[in-house]
Length: 259
Image (cartoon, rainbow, N blue to C red; front, side):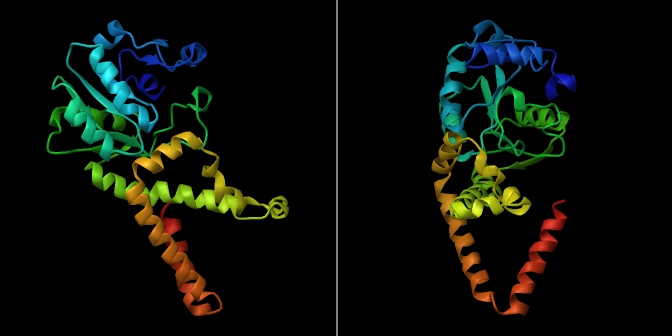
């Protein structure tokens, strides 16, 4: 939708598992046309192929696309984990396919075509990964695409990406899960805006998040250890007003800078 609204692409073709998704995508002007099967003719005319599939599926679908094509094109993805995906595809894809790992930090706990909207990427950080094997021209073109749909492009290597998103996305998601499971049932009717805001992302797709946590488990475990240490420090300051206030003020100042 963002590509078409911004006239970034001459034509957008969509592939999805279900026919009703394709019909709805066409009705919502998300795509010009589409199918439930990857079509060699359409793929053969593509300059850029974007894989917006669960992390476990990226490598498999990328290889399927490679088998169905013979021409040169750019391939990117939108998965929340980059290290294992980039390493695998740089080894096994043919040289004619220039792969650039991407991760737009946008979206919500909602999913599916009805949750889509053209302004999703406006102002969002869009990570684009670079390695020693990255094609510079392809990197520029993928970066330009994310900029044209409103994103703030950040270029980094896949390993660093996984370290950072463990801190800013993956561990916070598990913290939201833990918070959601924390109260006893009789406390839930008391839930107000604070609890609802803090636990919103726990409503996300469990299957996708299981994949994310498994694929980035080393960095997530490291970050969770830091979080547990931080909670223990806060626990120790309760009852010691001045120490607790320092942490509360620091957190408030940092949170206000995010607004």
